[in-house]
Every structure is written in C-alpha cells, then in structure tokens.
Image (cartoon, rainbow, N blue to C red; front, side, top):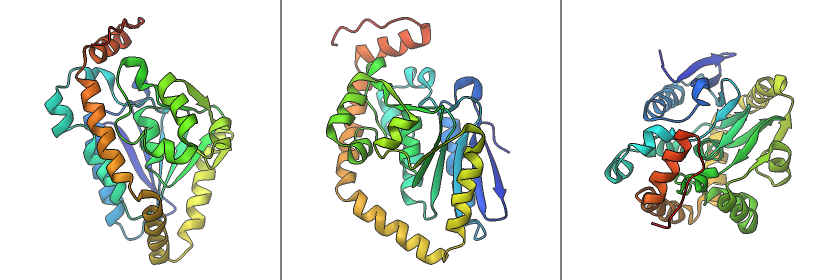
Length: 257
C-alpha cells in the first residue's frame, strides 16, 4: 500500500506506523511526507483507532530529512512544498501519538518525535539536531520545541554543536518519557497506548487539546521565524557545500557565504 512506511492496526484500536526506509536510516523525503499524511488521515477518520504509535524500521527512528533530495531543492521548493503538510497534519491531529524511538533520532526525525505527544526510547537511541553540520538549521520545530522542553542553554548546546545525546540523557532532560530495552520498545508503547485507549475518547481529545494550548502559546510565531531562517540558511553557499560534503562523505569547508 505504501512505499516508505508501513501501517497496521493493533488490537483493533491502536494504529502503528513504521517508517520503512531502513537503507536510508528512514530519512524523510517528500514521498514519505505524502504517505505519512495519508496514513494519519486514515487513522484519524477511523473511529475504532484511539491512539497512534510511530516507530522506525532498522537501526534508526529517522536520521532526518533526505539530504540528497534537499540538496537538489530550490528556495521556491522549500517555501512551496517541503515537509509542511506533515507538520500541519501532526499539529492538527486529534488523537494521541506516541513516538517509539528505536535508534538514531536526528534532525527532522527528532522534530517528528517532538511533534508527537509521548516519547518512548530504546536504550540505544541517540537524539539531536545536527543540521548545523551541513550548514543549515532545524526547520520544523527543532529550535522552538526543543528549547521549550530542555531550556535555552542545553538547546543552544545541542543545536550549535550538532552533537547527539543518549536516550538516558534525553530522559534526564525531560525530552523522553521513558527508556526501555530495545526488545521491549513496541510492547511498552502499545501498553501505554492501550491504557490511554481505555479512557473516554472525548475526554482524551479535550485533554490533549488543552495541554497543547498551554504548550503552543506563542509557539506559532516562533515556528514561523524558525522556518524563515531555515529557508535563508538553505540558500547559502555553505549549505550547498555542507550537503555536498555529507553526500561525498568528507568534511565540509565553510566560507561564511
């Protein structure tokens, strides 16, 4: 049914979406954006489904946006297409979404996780916003949601150095709800989903929207500002050099242009 994801319904009421580009560390490309939006739309319209779990296949949840695709995009592409349909869908999705991080969760992958409502991570998961390493910045909430969760100073460190942190440190910082053994990841996510599914659906939806209202106050302005700066960064020579270097597996030479 899908090329880049898998979707199934567990126990009749839990939607499970698996990112399925393991050979690319589940990098998010435009096809995956399209398929995720479609799958989420189907799960939202299915009255039997109460909670959704998103995980990845292989050794990554998602290593972020597909750099090869992004390197070939124009300024206009970034503004008109990009991954905005996915982030818009996540923002408006009425049912709880649990992210189950099975491995590397970086860049757009971490932004996808942070757009969810609960985050469970395996012991081997590594999290971060490494966009700075290819001459750009996070463009889908990485500077905004991350700062709200872990604070200005730690967010500055992660975004400006591009380093990844362990699941255990992410839990200590409040970025992850719980860390479990890899073989227990999906069962733990399903357990939480099952518990939520047992509650009154309308109350769950209202509670989620109320929490997001508290969390999102003034977030939209920040996301708009971040998106503008991301597009500016994407048009620089340093960004092109950074992405070329990444694809050529060499260190980039940045010239401040």
